[in-house]
Image: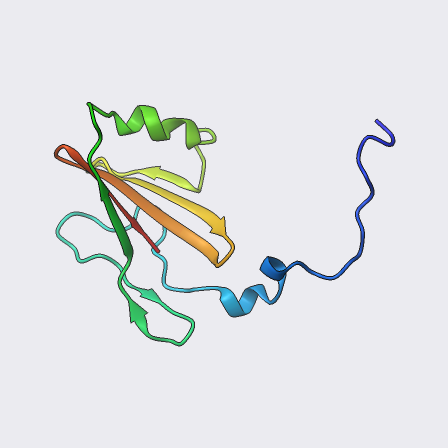
Amino acid sequence: MAGRFAPRTTGPALPHQAAPAARRRTGAPPPGAGAEGRTSPQRTGAEGRTEPPLTREWTPSGPLDLRLVLGPLRRGPADPTFRMTPDGAFWRATRTPEGPGTLRVAARGDRVGAESW
């Protein structure tokens, strides 16, 4: 395998790698948090103000089983970044260029709703 990959260089950091602590946001709920009947968690911006979660709704053109669509993203039964709650919502934690992120996807009748922090 020698020579298959070019050696890493020690050049300057790329723009998305510079000062990651300054871009991080706090206040994201842990996977599995948030149950029906409770208000949505808030996120805290870099300036310290509270912001509502980013939301999106989508109406699929046909029947959709979220378990079949999102299930392959789970990396084993003990994956700490993926949770399915009893109410049928899926929680996913991931890294983003802005810092850690959390996504909640749930079916709402014939629509699919998502919230992100």
